Image 1 (cartoon, rainbow, N blue to C red):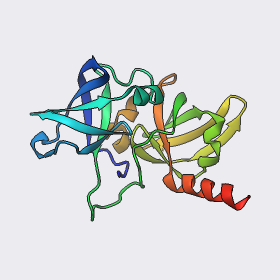
Image 2 (cartoon, rainbow, N blue to C red):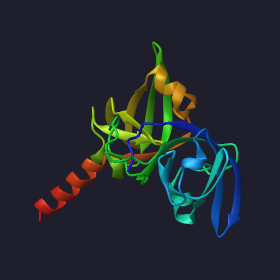
Image 3 (cartoon, one colour):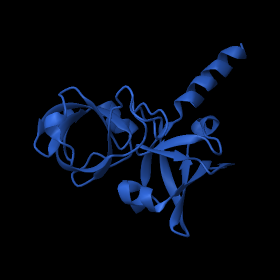
Image 4 (spheres, rainbow, N blue to C red):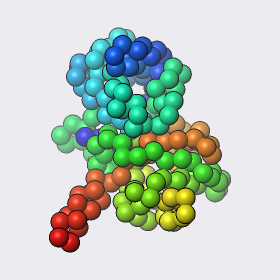
Length: 201
């Protein structure tokens, strides 16, 4: 379980194809303190640490994960938002994040608003019921507040605002139109939709 508060930006150093994809990620974390089997969210994807070396850790990324995450995410040189799993008693600074990607969104517009950047995304209409103004959403592992939602002919558009701090401590400050990102909907919205499904029976 995670909170969507990024604590490091890692960089993929090496990718090896060996059944699953073995990915080596450089990090500022103290890797001596990371146990094998620990969970780390990598741009919103919960992955298991299978090996550590000073300044880097390794994860195995399955074909299923590659297929369900943003294209070209698992390539050498790619920067990733990193978050270690919550511990009991940790401050919940963002919202409850599971590290399970629900879909991929495309950036369709980036607008400067003062020191902030307003970013508009497009997702498939299937995710529309889970996005609400002032609700929570996770983009590439970052907990954000939805500022606007608009159902359009080409899918659902939603916008978020990035303050300067979020721009500087995550990869989202470098987003531009045409890029793809991982989206996780609010887990509470997921359960509410399931409850509504059964209430209507």
